[in-house]
Image (cartoon, rainbow, N blue to C red):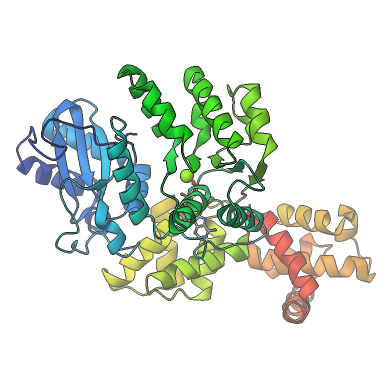
Length: 480
Ligand code: ADP
Ligand code: MG
């Protein structure tokens, strides 16, 4: 994937080498392939410009669209372009106009950009323009504008990420003092870039002039370009004089020996000066394959913080807040349905909310369980593995540290009855099993016993915080 706009003579937007109508024809081809609804939601109003060298530029209103479309429709856009232009395997560049900070983060694609919103020549590009420090400074500037949404305030926490937020705030407030480097790691969509951007913004807000906040790929490109252009000294001066260096997706360094070597020296130079370094990665330092031991040990000297997928309650809160950000009130049962289905990626949660927004505002449909189910299967397919009775049995036994046979026995001691009732309650909530089947499974009881158990737990749940916590623990384990 390539988000960069390579500089072409006369500027990136000048001299398209294809007929202008080709963009419209590519869009038509996309419409034909994705169908009317998806097209209206995601593609209407986009600009598509085929370029020389087998590239196609897609201009999108927000960086969220960029991420979403590149995750899901990159290949389809490439194929549609190939069909119209005859280019083999075109590369797709998604570009966000620099002023997109002015549009709401979740503006739908069909909201026509305001005049001036799509200003040719000024883009928030994901890649550096490494050839001069001036352009680098400019691209950092535009990047910061479009990243206003990445603030600490917008970061919603639960057990999985509370510590990461606290660490990020500490580093934002006291750069270079305590945790150096700060190393955040976790799988995709956990908020690593979000926190990195929030720290960047905090540094800029406190007046730091030389904050370098880039992706590792940009660092590598910049390094290679400066070698090629005989500007390695300039490169070193620039990086080693940074007041803070924040590098996103440092795992990109794996098996890039020269870039690693250079980064190692940059790292040492800056930490010796007490300058803050923040790194994010998809894996812990020791788990990045091909990362040299000395870098691993440097990274471990700071603070290494994992970010795990948020638990159910946090996911529900995220959905509600992201909805509210767009003026969309998401009913609790709908939020819960989504949170149970989309478990480990906040970006995917945002995708659902965005889709619901267009459902309500463009398609004028109701935000109810049925329509939400349809959206979920449209986005993620129908592969929602049902939780079964065995999984519930195992989760309960694990949480209460008891014997499986006791759960199914006829024993009536309290330490067994309560977990058994919880098992029945969870079975009712999360499986399609009937009351009779549940009763049979939990020791051959009849359906009225199950009904009673379910009501009992529902009642106690609302009064007893410790029981609620245990239910949450079991449910998050089930829904992982
Ligand atoms: P990563 O870098 O870990 O892949 P991002 O930081 O890009 O993930 O997060 C993906 C999207 O989800 C971003 O739009 C981000 O703002 C949002 N996001 C992630 N975690 C949270 C959170 N805890 N609260 C609010 N938004 C979040
Ligand atoms: Mg990221």
